[in-house]
Image (tube, rainbow, N blue to C red; front, side, top):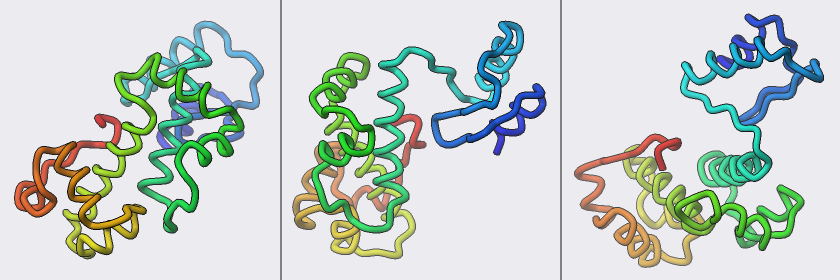
Length: 171
C-alpha cells in the first residue's frame, strides 16, 4: 500500500504491486521520475533492483518467505522442485545464481527463514514444539531442535526464555 501510494503521488499508474515487484501501465519512466521514485522508495526502506540475477534472487527470497511465513499447508515437495516450478527455471541455474550473489545457499536461506518462523511461533506461545515441527515440515522435534541450535546456539526452550527475533529483511 505504501509503494502504491508513492507511485500514485508521482502520477504513475500501477497495474500490480506485490512483494518485490511493481508493474506499471507506463512502458518507460522519464529519468527524473525514475530517480525520484528510487529516492522515495529508498527513504521508505525499499531497494530498487534492475539487474536480472538480483531480480531472480529476490524472487527466490520472496517465494521462500511466502512459503515459510504465509502458506498454511506444509510443503509436499522438496524446496528445489517448488522453486523450479514457481519460477519456471532449472534449479541448478537458480542455485548457482543465488550463491553467486548471496553469502549462503538457497537451502541455507530456507533453513534461516524456517528458524525465524520457529522463533515467531515460540514467541506466540500458541503451539508446542511438536506442532511447530509439523507445521514447518520437520521430520521430528529432534530435527527441528538440532537445526534450531545449530543456527541460534540455543535450544528452542532456552530461546523462548530470551526471545531474540530478527525482522525478515535482516535474515
